[in-house]
Amino acid sequence: MKRKRLKMENKKVDKIVLIPSATLGLILIALYCWRCWKSKKKFKHSVMINTIFQSSGIVCGVFLVISIYIPDIKRLIADLDLYILISGLAVLAVSLQGFYRDAIKSTHIHRHSVGSAQDN
Image (cartoon, rainbow, N blue to C red):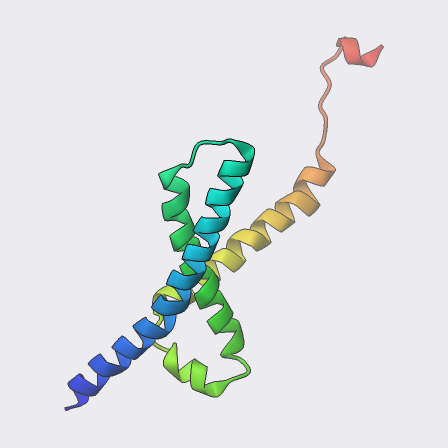
């Protein structure tokens, strides 16, 4: 009985994520298609596929943020461990990029060789 209830809850979570992700994906693909037409660029299927993945990530990211404020959503998405991992990796990547840009790249040390043309 418990296993059957878990299966039903997983289907509910899947639909909660699938329907908004598919809707957003179709809207973003339509936007991309329109921009390709306006800019006379070739439509790339790889961009279309990536857009579907990105729309799913956007929807799950929104749910993760909203779950802080709405406990019912937190219970519904508790089984989305993959998206929690992905969001953690995204925060890690953005933080590392920000640190590199702000602290490393902005303080780049130029090394000049002795007698180079730049010394003149």
